[in-house]
Image (cartoon, rainbow, N blue to C red; front, side, top):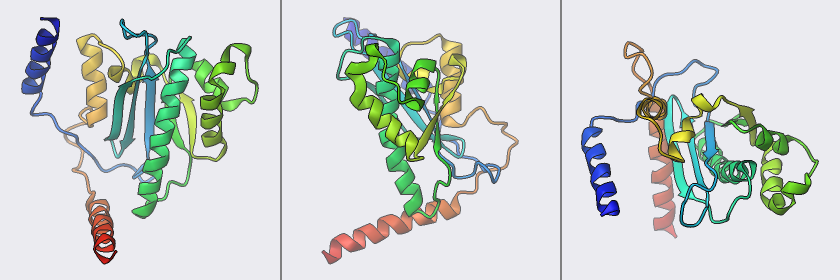
Length: 219
């Protein structure tokens, strides 16, 4: 009965939000076609396995282009560890998205900012000191450190109230959920803002897929 009730609630939400859509808008020159990312995690939120939930969203031109909400495969022993797993997973996707942007002709000149609300996670990504309580997560730590060292991404602090990915990790009060949903979908912008101009990006996406299809036919 609980699962049926949850399924019905999801269907009611989908019916009531079917008018919503991702909205991409023209950005200032400094931030146009520049990727950013939000990553977050709860801690031991699954009552059956005590696994944490990873949530991240990659943003481009005011709205989401890639996102994920998934249960972690290991049991995190601390909030910092759970956040680190989430940041590491997000870093993998950021690397992939940067390559796509490069293929489209929009090379990311600066490290992609990953907004994180856990200071321990940020600090471990910036220092070579391995604390006793973090030894067991060293593989993820070094993976994230390498991404930061190579200039792929940089972790920056964001207030928990402004952590957009928070809504992908747990149930939230309606006002907070709607705030984060609006940020992800680009709905928080002033409706009077000019319509987006993504024609060059769209044309390059079409060209990229057309080229890939042609290569497959030739092979």
